[in-house]
Length: 410
Ligand SMILES: Nc1nc2c(ncn2[C@@H]2O[C@H](COP(=O)(O)OP(=O)(O)OP(=O)(O)O)[C@@H](O)[C@H]2O)c(=O)[nH]1
Ligand SMILES: [Mg+2]
Image 1 (cartoon, helix red, strand yellow):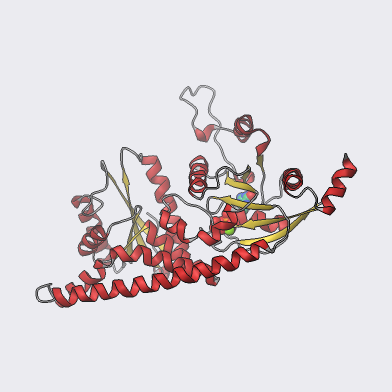
Image 2 (cartoon, protein in one colour):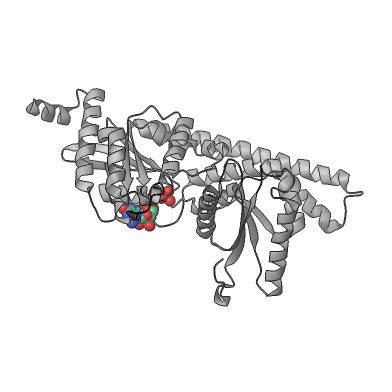
């Protein structure tokens, strides 16, 4: 638990909750909660306490068991007694309407889950009309099956449900209808945007398209800026980028298009991925993907799997791909004592060893850089030049500027 100082009293505070299950051991849960805390921080909430519980699976009634829920309630009460208000409780998994209703009744504070938190950040980050429309649609998709909770809230205010059932249902049905209409409108709007974007993409000319993909916060925008000398917003926050940016990059005599796009994350609901269809078309239509990985992250291997799974969901896993490991400057490891005979863990592997392992596995389809210090960037550019040219010659064999150059070299 972190220190709580009075000068920060205006910052919304949060308690986060996760489960340890047969499928998610303590270490994993800690990593998930670290990430959830980072998400909360990105959304502007300060995490003051974590709760975890060892169970076989989430309870369908209250997610955690009754005892744990009381523990959380007692904590909130104790904080309130000290004039420290807990603004919200955030759960690491998506909650059902029923779970939210029951938990809220017990804890009497704002209840969020991983999905609604991510949606909140998306809403905060959305800049363009496309992103805003996509986020709004995703928010309604999340809200619709959970609408009853608004109604229960009302119920409580009016003191019981007797005699209110009729108008209550009507109210709910009305809300649902309004939302469904709004969703239809948003879908229609996205369709129009899609058509527009498809036309735009067709008009881009005969250039190879390279897409930067990867987990959130791995450095995609930083690399994009470095390669294209553009100024895409990059910072140490999750989902700094929501909109796709496309830039023309020229390496040597070879122009191509490079796109930077929204980062992926664990437990991202498919609905949300669907809503970002037009943003992710850039990935789907790319000729080659650069999968950027943050090698300094303790859990980068799982991040790779999450990205691969998301790409498969998008139908983009068959594309040519390069894995580029970023942040080699920030990689840390602990050398084991010679007399320590316990098995080596991930923390005991040196960068050289790790690089050797991956190169043995992937050959020249993997690469190691630091977008921050510029380490190996020149070599990365050379490699990209080679790969893009290969594709270009295959796809546009009669393209003048390249064809000439190509012949000269024959
Ligand atoms: N140490 C180190 N930090 C880096 C490197 N590359 C990027 N960063 C930092 O990592 C953070 C995230 O960088 P971004 O470029 O915003 O990452 P992104 O993948 O675009 O993230 P999202 O758009 O949020 O998905 C920033 O604070 C960068 O300064 C690197 O090579 N080394
Ligand atoms: Mg970015």
